[in-house]
Image 1 (tube, protein in one colour):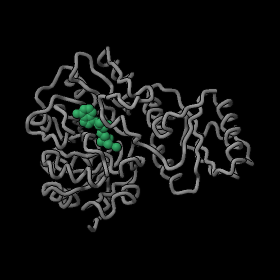
Image 2: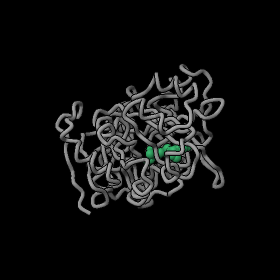
Image 3: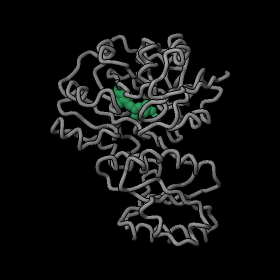
Image 4: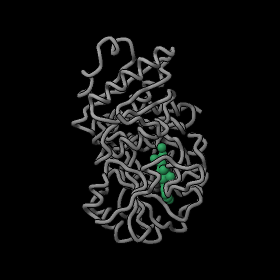
Length: 356
Ligand code: AMP
Ligand code: MG
């Protein structure tokens, strides 16, 4: 299949003419990748089981990993859900449109092909103007998982999408780099107490401030045993895996850098190609001779964690393009946005963490 690529002139103010063809493709059961405020999504009509199947095929995604239905406005929610619990109503008012997905009891209109066989449905209203207008023009809810091949880091630019999806889908809409860089926060509002299933830019602190009590799915915190059942089925897969073997090192900046230097030297002696992921604030703790001998990337500024989230997947993808076969990466405090950052890094590292 030939994949068409279009570029939006002004991503804050996309014109309907630019998005019309993409909307037609979605209506007819085709696949279109598009930017959202979190990561690039791979869209298909969420009410069309055959279209949903094509998403799984293009990504190589296991079919028990359900899709998130994206809507353009509040009116889009009602046909998808059996009811809207009180916590869901509050969250919607506070954070929609935005990087928050909620799990609701599903209505009969949503096919099991979209929900991975579950009786619940995940719904999000994106704030990105391109995503939002495209969904409105398509006139259907749009199932849109991250537009990467399953097991690769999520795409944060149209080039990342092109690497994974060229030849597999009808169209890629280039709206420039995304804003946030990590996937949406997921909250299950179907139970007595709302439960965080995946951390994101809407942080646990923000959720608790609004709702009071919020539980956290154990799958977020520790490694999963093989027979465990996380509430978000996708959390059991090693989603964000770079090609190289990755280890996280946790501790105070100076001690962390010292341990990474020690580990890097040891691995080099063993003949491995070593990479290091650091930050602007810690870079100076690494000796110049090591920095020049190795592939070293800064992910951003600890002081501004949104820069770390923004660059995280691009840095991991960049390492995939190199011969590096082991990466040592600095850890972050697991509070606020750091919780989402650490969740992605921990998974990329297959839960290999060294504490100093
Ligand atoms: P992605 O779209 O690739 O960011 O992944 C979507 C995430 O949402 C996966 O982790 C899914 O398991 C989760 N998800 C989607 N629908 C549901 C649902 N009905 N219940 C629980 N988790 C869901
Ligand atoms: Mg994904």
